[in-house]
Amino acid sequence: MAESLTIYFDGSWPLCRREISLYRRHPDADQLRWVDVSAGESLGADLSCQAAMARFHVRDGSGRLYSGAAGFSLLWRALPGWRCLGWLSAWPPMSWLFEAAYRLFLPLRPPLQRMARRFWPEGET
Image (cartoon, rainbow, N blue to C red; front, top):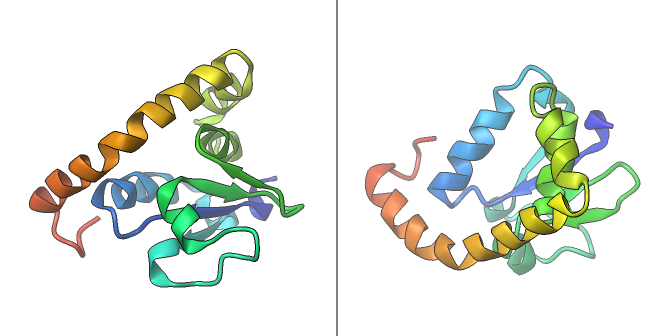
């Protein structure tokens, strides 16, 4: 499963860069395809840059797109050491709670981004 996942992330956001760098240091992370949506790479017909910048997305090997908490759940299940959290977050009603928490976080993202830019220069991860 892991080798067929494409992870779309917003590399222009310091906190996102830091979180993704945590996952990318995992020994199995080289089996995943990492796409920084802020770099202008093609994302596919069903994912616009605007949508990808607004929410976290993961595409599985069959081309199905997952976003928000479901995307994180898929990513976590692909990485040993994170799998328990991945399976827990995929199980209803926990999946609903994880998605609700993710949606509550989204409006906080812009002010957190502004704050993070003060502490972490653009090139630092």
